[in-house]
Image (cartoon, rainbow, N blue to C red; front, side, top):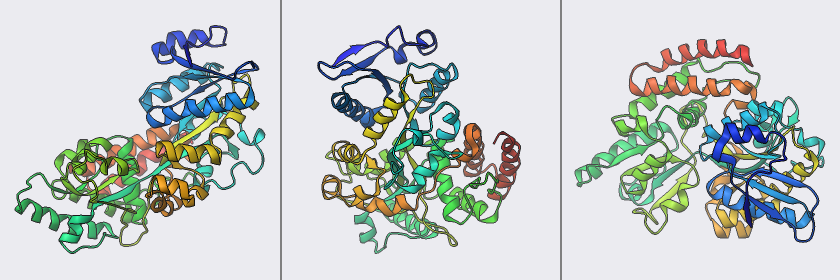
Amino acid sequence: MTHVSIPHQRAGHRLLKTATGAALLGGTFLAAPHVLAEEISIACGTGDAADYCPIAAEQWAEKTGNTVQVVSTPNSATEKLSLYQQLLGSESSDIDVLMIDIVWPGMLDDHMVDLSEYLPEDATDGFFPALVDNNTVDGRLVAMPWFTDAGLLYYRKDLLEKYGHEVPETWQQLTEIAREVQAAERAAGNDDFWGFSFQGRAYEGLTTNALEWVASHGGGTIVDDEGNVTINNPRAAAALDLAASWVGDISPEGALNHTEEETRGIFQSGNALFLRNWPYVWSLANGEDSEVAGKVGMAPLPHGPEGESVATLGGWNWAVSRYSEHPELAADLVAFITSKEQQKAHAIQMGMNPTIEALYQDEEVLASNPSMSELYETLVGGVSRPATVTGDAYARVSNAFFNRVHSVLSGDLDGEAAVQQLEGELRRLSRRW
């Protein structure tokens, strides 16, 4: 593979050079031997996603005889979104295919083609319906699901067995078990031990955690599918009050500033009984350098007294820019990367969770990662953040939500006051959607 910069003859190059600087100066050029048809550019992600994206793109290039340029983008999702908004806002054709977060379709849909116009009618058959719905805006399929995530409960199997407890099914059970085991472990000499570790910083991760608390109490999803603000209800308030009771009791005060990696660190070092996190933790917690390898269990998240277990969905998708000079070829590349064969390879080689339901029963996928089978029911019952219905207002909706929740966790507001204030703010924002 040869590293090249984005071709100067492409429309919008001036914007790339001035607005995005080094973020897009590097790329990888993938071409089929002896054949040159059209050139398609694709913006890959980071980490394992980016590692596999060029592989799939090269396979498509070899299959079709076209060339593919892999464009590097910022690591931060916030910076990546900003970059996309600059490019698309200028109607630049520099990127044909974009990897987008699960909460971006409603923000970017005006700039994306309707993939149903280019793909077969059965293109979405077999995918998780909730993910297809998430990517469908006003009847337009603006993205195809690639890999997914959902919130999970990790627990110490050895400690639950030691103290005679089953995996908790409700948040109240989790609270009581965590309190008991924490006290016992500290009495045995581990002063750093905590009952429950979760993501409590005021950021998008807190939106995913708090949506799980609220929805699993039967308190709705902040904004419903019709765009109605539903957060101001007693069940939602009770869920937030319960979470606030954890801080300083079964969760450290530092939880107010914890993201995924801080919480994983606490759990993986042997200093927590329960952890809420994403599927990526499984292989790391059971890795050679983990203090808890072989002692970890994984289960659906608990629920409230009047709700069911709910996991917030995460993940990434593929979309085609409206300003692509070759939308049909770009859509074909999207279909190739999100195909069953490619998702299976992505799952086996990189451990990423497929968006096609049948792969959770695939013997080779399960052999590579047995935890995949345990994820299936969680993903089927997963809840999406209200990003599609709120459109380009979602960032403000999420910001308002996690800030109010953080105030409850910090003790500055109680649940009832928080959901009342939040309703007022979201109703004002609702004019935008």
